[in-house]
Length: 131
Image (cartoon, rainbow, N blue to C red; front, side, top):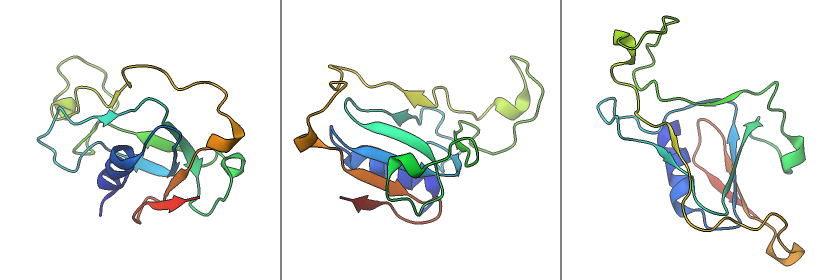
């Protein structure tokens, strides 16, 4: 399973109160280079965090400065440093890499009884549900 499927699956199955922990690496919203409409659709009440090595047991163990987690729309992996409207290496990029959640927001301070479940996403393995 590729990284796009792992993160997309986690976002699909997550419900309000879940946290998704993404390990160091680059994640694309699809492995189909022709699907420019692919996006990481966020959900109300689901938190997405990067900066994990893949072995952590607490969110506080992550290190986003050292373990860079990238959500990329460069579906072919061929972008260069030229920033132009008509740059041909961007012709297959996603229109929207991340799309925000709609509806009511999750409350800022959940009760201790409703602590989130975490989905730990190592970049090369299927997501594990951590309780």
